[in-house]
Image: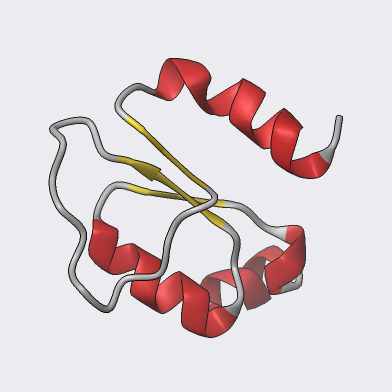
Length: 72
């Protein structure tokens, strides 16, 4: 995640990650990237996974969730 942030030229708190796996939530939390979880099939997150900013089953709700998060 740090490599991607560096190449994009943004700080972790300036990025948003859309996770397709709950295991991504562990890595993004360690780096400080706010994450949304696209849990399209209703999987359980691992015990040690931090909570996402929002968990959703469809990406249709993603723009509104991001707007809510950034206060737009």
